[in-house]
Image (tube, rainbow, N blue to C red):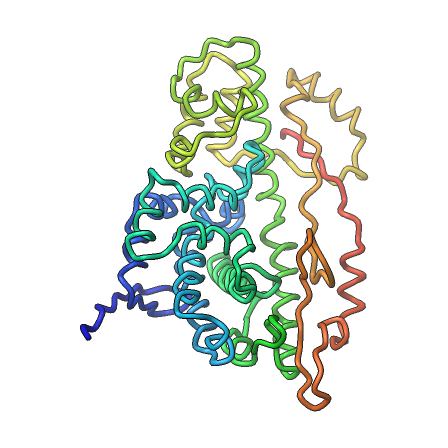
Length: 405
């Protein structure tokens, strides 16, 4: 039997990441996957943390690595067929291939979820991904179903998407490292080594409870300090108001100079889904160019908003409860600024510490095994912090307002 050539990628977070099956490097070398090099992992947070310019490309490879670590656990490996193992590694590698420019930021204007685009890209008969998967004897729909969470082996789905999965174990370490913060010193090897399969669930040894609590608190602090940083939220707001102005101009038959603006956004502006071929042409660099194109248009507002985005001159952020909204609108009008574009009300995504139960039809509990009493417990049964987690989850998300400086 001929040995397969092992290829290695050097990673800042995990060290050497090895690929022994050629299918993975073939997927990495596709045009669709290489596009992820041009999509920032943290979108607007890079403007708050200058070194956080890492990409969806490196994160996707990191998820592949963490999944390999899970597969070295005998209990998990024995619950998967050889085909399952290859499929789950492909799903981990490709799970974010459908992200748009600036990652989650772009979803605010397309109203399309990146998971849906990931599934479409993987199963696209005219693309490169499906052809490679088929050439190696696998079904692209199986990979897409893992990302969707509907694959026939539930353990495979949980490894890629659950409250404690390979995706989160990579991005928390990676985002923390590149942002330069230290909220998530995760004991990943300990967590993985203490995982086992019981009753079609991934459960953790009771003695891993403190490592799991640390993981959950680290994720919560990352949401509060990094993912929901006011600069990151302001960046998202700027993209929203820029697009709102673009849409209003389009609906009023504005004569755009840039054919590229019309080419990329006419579908969305008309309430349609963005076609896959156009979507795959979009990345952070394309969007920056489109902002530059906007600066050349004969519309003062579109020009100004694009200039603010490109030069990090974002709106200020206020809690709704701390301002007089009508007075702020009046002040903008006095300055000659239209409140429809220079003021935006929003509510940031609520950061949950731990969701104990069914969420969107999916069991989100983290389970533990008590070998002494020979029974399975949920984190809420075991953790001394469970009540604190519940209290944090009950906190209301406070409305915020973005106002031009």
